[in-house]
Structures are given as C-alpha cells and as structure tokens.
Amino acid sequence: MSTTGTNIGLVRAWGSGFDGWDGDMDANLLALDTLVQGIVKSVTTTAQPGSPAAGDCYVVPVSATGSAWSGKDKDLAVYNGSAWVFYTPKRGWMVYNQADDKVYLYKIAWVMAIDLSAV
View 1 (cartoon, one colour):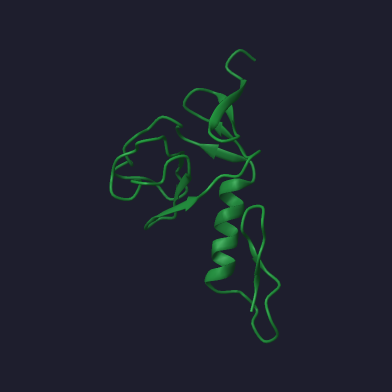
View 2: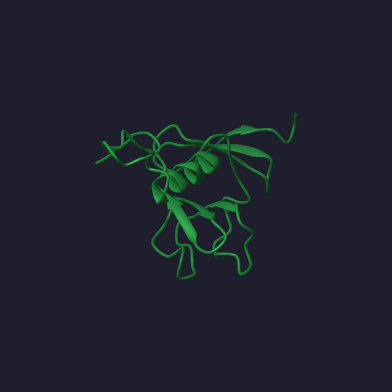
C-alpha cells in the first residue's frame, strides 16, 4: 500500500515489506527530472517528433497530432527512451521553453510569463 502525493504525483509512504524500488521509484525519478526546473524543447510543436531522444520534453499544444499525443492537450510529454510519458499540469507549474527563450506558467492554459530573450 502506498500514497500518491497531490502536487506532482510522486508515490510515497510504501507499506510494510514493500520498498518501492521498482517501477514506482523509476516513475518518481522521471517525474522529478521532468517537473523540477522543467525545460521543454517547444510549446508549439503540434506533431510528436519522429526520432526523439530520451529526456526530450514538450508542452503538447491544443489539437496536437500523432497517435501518442492525441488527446493530451496541455500536458507535458517526456520521452523516456521507449515511450511518451504524460503529466497533466497543475496551476502554478512553470517550464522554460528552449525554442523561444521564455518561461511559461500554467493556469488553465500555458501562458508566457517571462521573456528571457531580452536579458
């Protein structure tokens, strides 16, 4: 038995005799790597990349195409080396977008919050 945290969804508080060092911990580490100081390649790429590298992360824009991204509007998509993993954003999450050198904040949609290109 375990508990899922409410902020970024980390699994914790494993029950007696279960150490969590299997898929749960791998999922926790991927979530931390993706969401703590989030960095995305793009917030406008509408089709999932054909040859992503492990760790590539994107904000899935509204009406994205491709079988893996379909229906995942506004989610963060990170490629784990073999499949896309999705995180549904919560109000207050922020990501740095490498494509335009801006920081985006999630409220009910991703909005540009800070323009670093002029700094």
